[in-house]
Picture: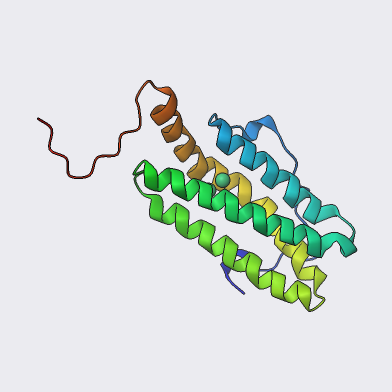
Length: 157
Ligand SMILES: [Fe+2]
Ligand SMILES: [Fe+2]
């Protein structure tokens, strides 16, 4: 199992259900909208009846792919500095989620709940440190009156 799921949470220390709070707002609306969806899906994975977990996990995977691809596109298109560690963190999460999909298909719903709890613990820190820096950057790019200009070795006259 990859890092995201280790060490396992001791019994009785389940994470609180992830719920939206405006404290999660970072100011770049397209990202805030995606984060709203993330929080909703993880909260459902933590609390939904067991029978609903396979469908919910599929919905979460679709979401996570879109979420992480979107942030990567923003970083690459605007040449955001230090994007590698952010992209690596997304990749680690995605790998864990895909491992859990296999285990859930074999009937292991406990691991799916553990993943959901782990995601609930992971998100606030990730949003605070990595996503917030990207949000500020994107606001500056898009709202600061500064158009996004992609220059490739074009010498100014
Ligand atoms: Fe994000
Ligand atoms: Fe992110």
